[in-house]
Image 1 (tube, rainbow, N blue to C red):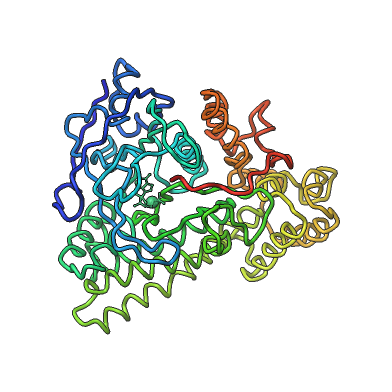
Image 2: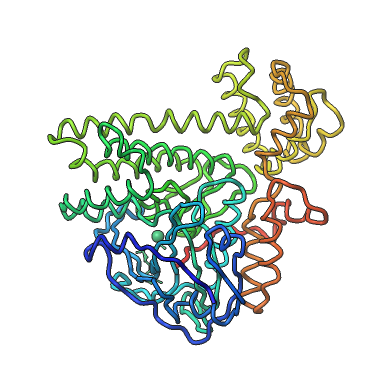
Length: 497
Ligand code: AMP
Ligand code: MG
């Protein structure tokens, strides 16, 4: 059986914050994937793992002892339009657990049936998006990006009606909090200051206990969320990750990547890349992500205004002061990360940050103009020596016009002259931040097709395995490094719904 030591603090906030809801049973749950490593980290004791029992719990057919299943209330701006009531329409919070190292996690089932917040939806998830979330969220974790994690996938034995009938799936996911910017907006839009404060106190206690010591704990709380999001989005940018649906209900208060819907990594570098089929205006395009982060955080700050100071004017000023720090924090995180990707270490005082910034931007522009693959360019750049050698061919051949890379490489090598690291040191440092493998969209699509169309999960398992060590080149796995062939290109990624 699986023993889960629950301690459910969200449930103590009371009705109004959620609606108590049991998951709806499914016809015949079967376990596709169970994340043993994560279960160990969480201290879930899975003894005599009987996949039948585990699937019963992770499909919601059996509610484990100590769980207090509920659907959380939240609002949100979706593509800029405010919906005062969204909420968990197809997800359920089973409860909170403490891991052996003392950290707290929430366990969610997604695809677990209708709730009070389902509106016209069926409360279910198709298997494809569930597999996508499992692959991408676990890859993000291994890449070193803060994220919700995936504990398990089950199939339900039922079909869900989307553009066609598809097999149903349920993902069990873990977060340090499922509170979103939209959770604060929910109460703010109702003018319920008491609830905003209760929610803020809960989040501060759970996620940011140190901010309690600050002169103004709520301003400190806003600041830490702003810092975390700025750093998070900088990491997305450095990996070519496009979230695709950065609505305020999909922005975590804990600074984790959350709600993997139409997300994707780009192959060839393109500033304005949009991959989501529902993002018609490119609101959530790759290069818009930093600005949208601030837009969303501004909605959070607005919601917190009543807590920041007794008079509104002072409160608004405080909020603005915090928001003003966002771009600086973002730019610093971005530049530090990008310099590291290019092997430019902080020790090189001769080269001002601005010069490095334009060198980096020139590389990105050259990549964009020459259809160079983002991940491969940095991967092969990590192999280059300070002196030009024939190894350059691997990276320059990624560019439509390789001479354009040569032009850039001349400047890059000149800049390396200011570095104190030798080639081996620099290459080692670069390889630690430039992944060999990312979950490429066409490979995710192939895994989904095999599973949905043929009940074959081997493609999913193989891809997942490779992504467990994204920074290490694995023997016989070079095909996972490659961008899609023309006939494999996935032009659009569909929303999880
Ligand atoms: P998402 O786009 O997945 O972030 O979801 C936006 C809102 O729609 C949330 O309130 C979800 O709970 C709700 N939702 C999405 N899909 C479904 C579904 N199949 N059934 C019910 N509600 C859903
Ligand atoms: Mg969502």
